Amino acid sequence: MENKDKFRADFKDVFNERDQCQKKAKEFTNQCLKPAVEDFVNRSLGTDITGEMRTKPQFSTRMFCQYSILQDLLSKHDFDKYLKYICSYEKYVKKWILDQIQLNLSNGSKVSEFEDRHIQSSITNISDAIKKAKMQKSDNLKEFVEFAHWLTESVKEMGQDLREKFKEPHILTKLNHLHVKPQNELFSTLIGCGKQCPFCKSPCEAGGGAHTEHFASLHRPEGLGTYRWTQTNKLATDICSSLVISDGRFRCHAINNAYHPYKDYRNIFPDWKIPPDGSLQASDYWKYVMAKFNNDFAKEYDAKHADIPSSWYEIKRNEAEESLKKSFSIK
Image (cartoon, rainbow, N blue to C red; front, side, top):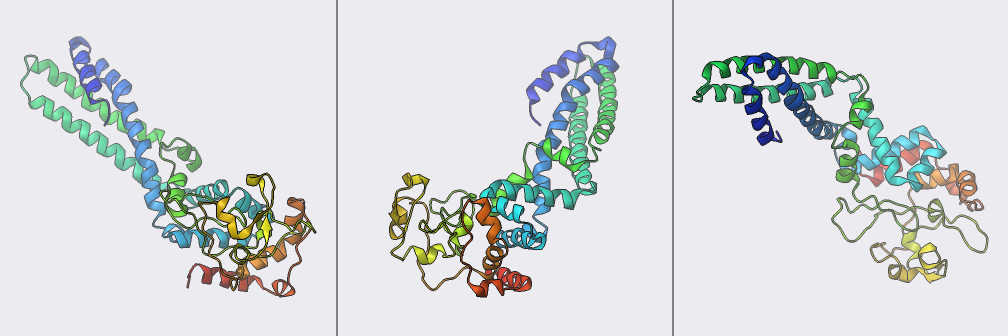
């Protein structure tokens, strides 16, 4: 517990007020101990919740977390959610994680268990400190014993008060008070840096935040990342892996919309490594998504709809889901 020196000094000050032992014990508890214990619980709870969520399948590994997010999008079949996922990736994923936390912990029993454990451990530590102090020699032993008695009683009351205070029924309200935000911790651990491919918006798969080079093993049709053909303004269906070995050119805000060869993309985006492979295709999952929401993406991006290959329209929803499982090695 923090501020031990301050508590010790306050302890001595109130002890000197021998004629008001009960009052001073309560005052010391409410002004010094109670805020400290409450702060300790709030500082610990975020880590507890993060650990609890890691026991859930969707947060067990980075791969399963990414799979769960995309599978959830597929099940909801909502264009606006796909748009937010692609264009506001970090914000969307953190909100998704927060929703999962609320869904799993909304009944409050697990959170209450964590809170009670930290309150009880704090009370035990305080009580042990009082007992230890009573064993030491003192010129005012009688007065100190009396003060220690009332302090012990006040600490018990404090425990009940804090348990009552932490009975807030809404998990979101609790989460907003935490020093450690579980959604941020889970994002950093399972999602990583949150950077996206500058062309198709696929998220970096490097993991963690300490890497200097970003990569994505599977890229998407570039039209999902707003790229379109200049001559026609139609959204592109090509993927980055094939474009970076083509004779094509791109333009973007980073180079003031000047044209630049795809082969030399690292001159503009040196921290991204895109595996050059003309044989790779977009997954059936993203083919399905682009085919289903072709007109929606075109309207949102102020472009013309892509020339979707007819085979993309034949992909069924269950095939898109199987493709997703294959991409993330989910059985």
